[in-house]
Amino acid sequence: MALTEESTPVRVLISPDKFKGSLTATEVAAAVADGLRAVRPDVETVLRPVADGGDGTVDAALATGYHRVSMTAVGPTGETVDTYYAERGGQAVVELAAVVGLDLLPGGVPDAVGASTYGLGLVVDHAVSRGATNIVLGVGGSASTDGGAGMLQALGARLLDRAGREIGRGGGALADVASIDVTELSERMDGVHFLVATDVDNPLLGPTGAAAVFGPQKGADAATVERLDAALATWAHAVAEVRGEDLSTVPGAGAAGGTTFGALALLDAEVTPGIDLVLDMIGFRRSLENVTLVVTGEGSLDEQSLSGKAPVGVSSAARASGTPVVAVAGRCLLSDDQLRAAGIAAAYPLSDIEPDVTTSIRDAARLLTRVGEQIAHDWL
Image (cartoon, rainbow, N blue to C red; front, side, top):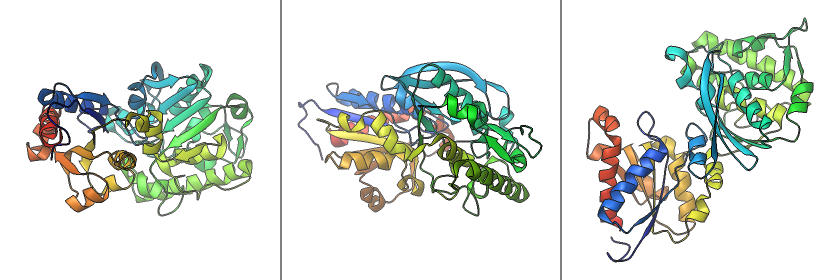
């Protein structure tokens, strides 16, 4: 059903997440916009790409006027990596995946025991040295299970063994930590506020903790998971001695190999759902004014999408304003009833026009432009 007469100008807000392995969220939005304008040249397209707190969070900030800051840091296993973050007005948006993420493992070879978040701390320190007093950490896509210890080491924390020697980096090294000196950390991060964006609610330890649930994705076999969980327990005990309370059971503490735990306990960070933070950061709700239609989406619309992922976050915010929402996707595994319950009026998967997955990934931009044309015909 058309929303307006053919001659009436319309405004469409396009807020997709990335199509992982194919297109960034910005590229998805641009391709859809091209299709809409091919059918309705008068349409005003407002591009507000989103992310759920993982990879793509910095790009979402850059698309709304943040400045890109490039730098060299240390990757998950100690190699030099080129990375970047976003800053504006004393706020920096830092993405774990862009410096110590799984995709940055040399040759794709995981190191479940030795991988570290040290490089993340270097990026944070760089932002603080440039005057940032508010740090947003998007922590999805971690390659390590070090409880955020590496990040804290880079920021000045001294992790000591029983002999008073500093321990090494990585989750395995945490088995040796006996005490923590946070003097320098506290001085360097004084006056800096941290906000961690994550959609994970796992605790740090145990059968639903960082090592057990996410360790296998990082190359950990059953014995290594057990080793890492024990090392994280040692780390949590040492942190509790400094903090005065145990935060290892807080929901979300296990996110990104426990990076959230380290930020909570020793940086006094706050935790917020990733998509909510991103929507606020990009001014999504303000952008809804006088919008005829919202287009969101991600690579795969499935059961995971219903648990706080970007498209459902977008639809929830749009629904409050009464604006209809449609979604684009590489594939859609949700029923019409599930989509409607999530506030999505219709889904437009690329698999409907190109069933071959390899071709769909390769030609995603072209296919999304065709989908944009179809959305224009159906809704504008």
